[in-house]
Length: 461
Image (cartoon, rainbow, N blue to C red; front, side):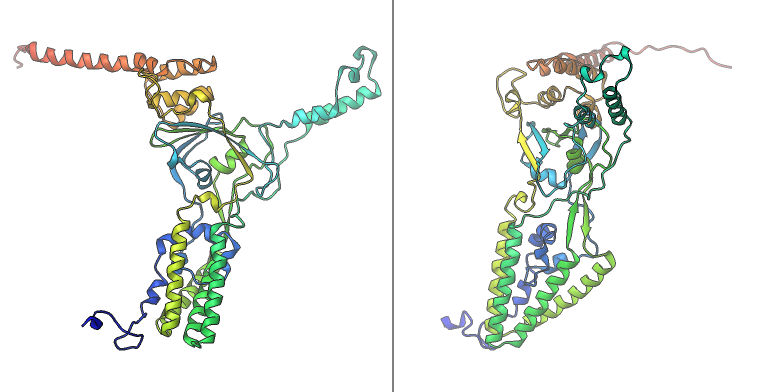
């Protein structure tokens, strides 16, 4: 009786059958969609191999930008406002990991060496200062102005005239881009899956199983075609002109009331925050559509062939797909910084000691309790400006709040780090709320105790 409970053997009658192995080839689409952009940004995407759910890459259109997150990004000095946070800054400082009402300050600069092209200018370098330093001008060079020009003085004046008459130039270097890491988990897994596919092909030749050879060949060719059609690289926005501009510091406000202040120059701000990343694909849109159609046909043929392999190869291919699905799922748990090469940027956490732990209690007073006002004051205290507050809509647009913001800016410029921001808010804004409530009560009582006036109007003819 026990033998009737489970199949026995591998025959086509009462034994085990693995016709469902073709279904394993298309399972795991959610994991592949999460890895699709990072996977196709590396040259390893064109390797012939078996991958779970290759249909995740068979899309009618390709994305033009990286995924974005809703967040208020405002320039402190230039006032540029962006309603979303770009993909790569969210890898550098994930906003989802910021506790509500927290505050943090980062300093992001370009490294001397890195994959990102050097920016055309920097907030810390002044071309006029460089030129003046190269001329080595001093009072001895100018000589006595009353005695007429000397040859040395004339050459010095020519240098000054050239310095201040030079027209603004623009950069012709290529746009910077952020590549994937050479040994990223996805690249390593792509190489491993290619070697695994080669091993399965050799096994199918040795058995021999021609159907398995054709199935592995078509599905590997389909993955290569689709990978080449989707092969791309992210391009960042760069400044073209070398004009002297204010610092590019930005403030990021999350929906949960956390503030992130990033101190950087305009080049970094344009590349990561205020600019737009573009997807630079290797093939045109028409070629992409043709390759996707060809890949779709090969995928359908391979699914049919996988269902007609012998038991041994179906078991081997099925186990391979199960292992690859598990590997892609495990990789999805890793930080996205493991996939992209951001070594061109130097990131430092420079949050002041008295601004850390803004989301935690310190004392039992108004100032010791975490609140949106206290966190916003910390940001104003570091930026010493309130224009970005009004631009981002962080505070209500009422006369009372404007009064508090102006007072906060004054105290921040005085470097009064111990100003009682929350207490002043209660005095300026909270007093209005209490007066409004008292007025409402008085009006309500008046309506209940004062009878309505009845006026007899004269009759009209």
